[in-house]
Length: 224
Image (cartoon, rainbow, N blue to C red; front, side):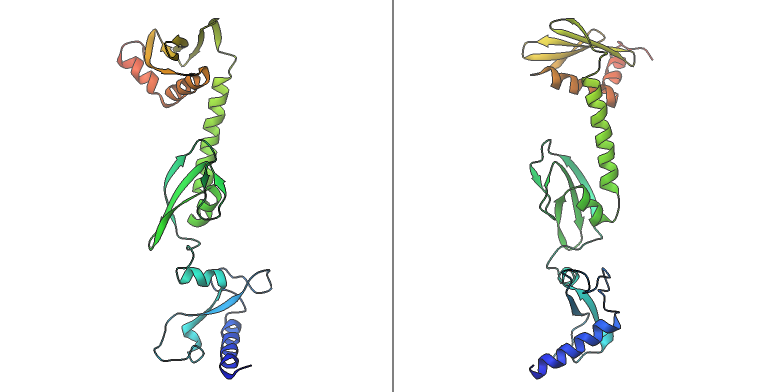
């Protein structure tokens, strides 16, 4: 072993032992598979050899945490979630783990480009359950939507008209020039949909958000 390597190895071992043989960030040790411990210099002194430092100016980091410290890979925590988007199909890719995703969370942190990530990576990066809680809400919403669309409360009045009454509103799905349209309390919507499924889905959104109720009340087709 060459002299400088021996000096560095002795210094490295001394720092690691002072830190209890673990990374000071993630607390993993080399007893765990794949963990490599390195010595990080918290401050550099010009013309000083790497092993000729006071140990208090150094700390033990695993290879991953060391790379994050030097900005080579994204920080593992401290991110903020600033947006959400539904791609409708799993055609996106988590920029952290590479998993295919449908639901995208936009996260950011100072000093690093914003990333589009999935539910689990968002929670890990923000050290929260924000994404999980949001997705629970989304899944409950989707469950209600599917129940509404497939409900036995839909009455088939004829081959081209479907009717359901909810929250005091008589909703009908009727044939339109380019597919299907919504008719509520005798008011026909201007928007048409290519399929019955899409029309029922939009009808659910209007009822769920209260937008349809507000509109009917405004035009005098619904009483409080």
